[in-house]
Image 1: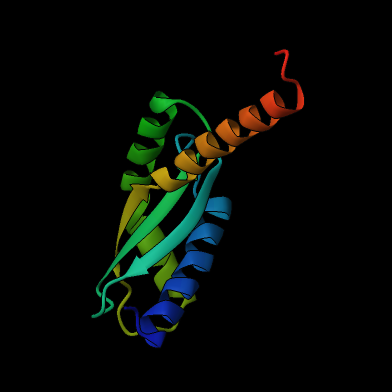
Image 2: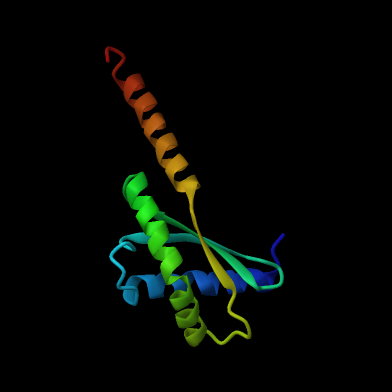
Length: 120
C-alpha cells in the first residue's frame, strides 16, 4: 500500500514528466506519448513511469528506445523543476493495460452491435 507521501511524489512526477516530454524533448522517436501513471518505491529512489503511444509494435519499440535515451535528461529537467531531496531513477514501462482496455471496449461494441442487428 502506498503512503500518502509516495503518492504525492508520484503525482508530481507524473505531471512534470509529461510536461518535459511534451515541451522539451526533441527526439523524433518520442512522438505522441501519454504518461498513464507513475509508481514510486517506498524509499523514493526509483520510479516506474507507465506510458502509451499510438502505433504498432515498431513504433512502440522506437519510442521505448527514445525514452531510454532521454531518461537522464528527463530526470535532470524534473529535478530542476521540483524541490525534492532526491529525484528518483526513472524507468519507462509500456502500459499494456491501456491496450487491453481498448480490445475489451471493441469486443463490447461488437456484442452491442450484434444485439441491435441480429441479422448481422
